[in-house]
Length: 347
Image (cartoon, rainbow, N blue to C red; front, top):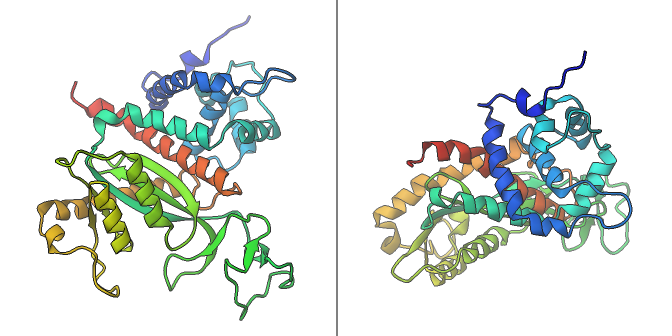
C-alpha cells in the first residue's frame, strides 16, 4: 500500500512561514527577469536562484550555523522542503554545490534588488518623513594572527604582538584584506571588523536601507548621508527628520543633511571641541524630542541581525560578500515583521 501526502498538506494553514512565503513568492515573481540571465545555458544545470534565496532565508530565520546543517535539515524537514519548493523525493544538494552556486549567483546586486522589492511591499506601513540611522560593528572572519605587515616584513607568527604598533596603514589581514582593525570606544578591544549601517523609519521600525562598509571613524556618517540621499529630496515645504546618536553630531553631517532637506535630530555632543553642531533652533521643537524617543527602535533590528541572523561575526570574507549578506538579512528582518503589521493594518 502506498500513500502520498504533499508538503503543502503537511504544513499547518496558520504556520507563520505561510504568510512569509506568500510575500517571497511575489518578490521572486517581480525578479524573474533578473533570474533568467543567471540560469546556466550549457553544462550541468545550476541550482535555481529562487531556491537559493529561499534556502538562505531559512538559514537566517532559524539561525542555522552552516550550509552543511542546512542541507541536512532540507533532507528530512518537510517544512523546509515546502518553503524552498522541493518535492518529497527530490535529492538535496551537497553543501559544496550549494555554496559554490550561492557565491556565483547571489551577489550585491541581487541582494539589493530583493531588499528593494521587500521595501516596496511595506511602503504603506512605513513613514517617509521620519527616520533613524545608526551603525554597528561586524566582526570579520579573520584572526589577529593574520594581521601582518604590508611591506612584506614579518611580525613572526602573529601570536605575540604586545608592544608593537599595528595600524591599518601598515598592516593588513592576509585572510581578509578588506577587514580593518577597529574599536567602537576607547575602552574596547580593537578587532578586525566591518561596519553595518541601517536606516529605519520611525513608525514601525522597519529597515528602509542597509549597507556594510569598511570600518573607520567616518564610515557611519558617510553611509548615513548616502542612504539619506538614496531616499531622494523631499519638497522644500515637507521637511524630513533623521535621528542619530552623538557620533553624528558633526558640522559636515549636519550641513549635508540640511542640503538634502532633512532636519538632523541627532543627540548633542556637548563634550566635543567647538560644541554641538546643532543648537536650540533645532532642539526647542517638539519633534526633536520625539525623534530622540524613537531612536531606540533601531536597536531591535541590530539585535535580531546580530543574534538570529548570525551577523555578529560573519563567516564570509571580503566586503562585497559581507555587504550582500547584511542587506539580505535586513530584507529577512522586514519579511518577518510584515505579515504581523499587515494583519493589524486597517483595510
